Length: 526
Image (cartoon, rainbow, N blue to C red; front, side, top):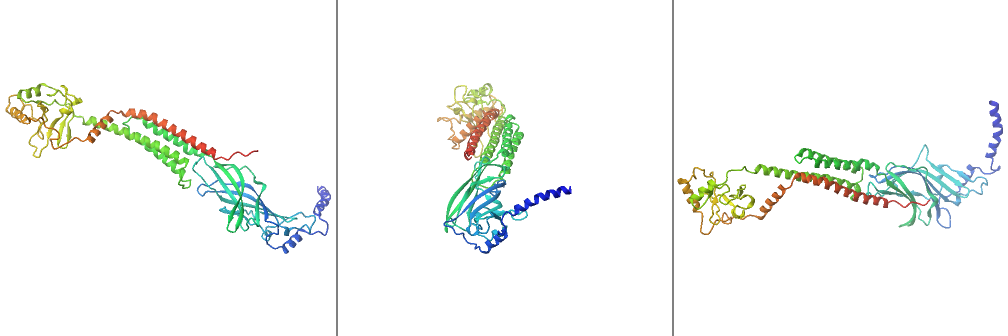
């Protein structure tokens, strides 16, 4: 085995020595050429007829995710520059050496265009373990430098269509020390290349492009090279974490429409729980976004869903209000008492009316008792009396509270009989009004004295009272609510709410999805 290894070395060593001896004997070595160049070099702008042309390209090595809170992104690039410096040419010193790989320390001894990323928040040169800087000097004086940089650059975020948004991030390259009269910047034929497929957790890089601009500063015009990266957000995360839960929450809030109107605790629990769930989801999404003053697509969706849940709570309140009004109406409806007895201008008619006519002297059924101020009265039921007279003409004055409350009066109409009740004392008993008794005759005499030739007393003559139209409208409104069934409101809501939510979905998704497609750049040919 040892003989075999010696035999291989015997035949390969001369070939290796021949490769190292490309240059003829007496030629300058690389070290001597570098020392000669650095010894006679002046770190000044190269002598050219015009501006020094600097060609730039970049290789994207890796890219970090966009940060919405700080509005920036992280990118690792290999930044390449080429320019020509005639004072660094060494063609006269060696005919066989075409380029020399220089150490990094020599880069600080020569002139550089001082190109920088002017909009970067932080730029660092990788050190693993030494600085990752590549420096080659060609025999004609061309300088090639390459830096491995980690750049944190800003992004102009526009979140109006979030989470269907498209964002653009830009790197701006300028010569920090020289205007375009001294240094002109140019992109190479292939300015940006990707060393691998870039995959971000939240975005897809859909396009990258380059631009060349000129900007005016007080010291002249500067060339500016722009590297533009376009990202499209992946909204699958938000579909699962925001949209699907809100759909389920809205559907759960509609379950209250299927419950009985009297199941107030259960319906309230469903509505409040749905409202709190959507509010908490909205808060969790907003805490990962910057505080912007405009409305985002997510804001429209969440506020719309909150409005629908709030609408179910309003519907619940309305149903409970109607149910309470109907229950209160049934509780306050007085029991059917014996009909009031009537009093006529003669004693016999009074007694006969009290004892024989169940509908009263007017042939009307008495309704519930009402009190307005100091006046208590009872209108007839159904508004029409048996003899064709209307309820408005037959309102019965039950009690008129005077200062001493010593007497009670009635409202007779056209000299006809009227109902009577003593107030505040209880109404006279059947014993006191028994036909032929002295009390009954005296009572009849008192009632007959109330009739005047001018006609019966009116509401305006009693305490100056005038019925108010607002009160009448309130009574009419309450009567209208009593005719509404709570179950019918739930049946209507279980149809109207899903239809309105479907209409809201159609408008929302059509508008924002169309906006997201409009924000995409046109596809590149080839």
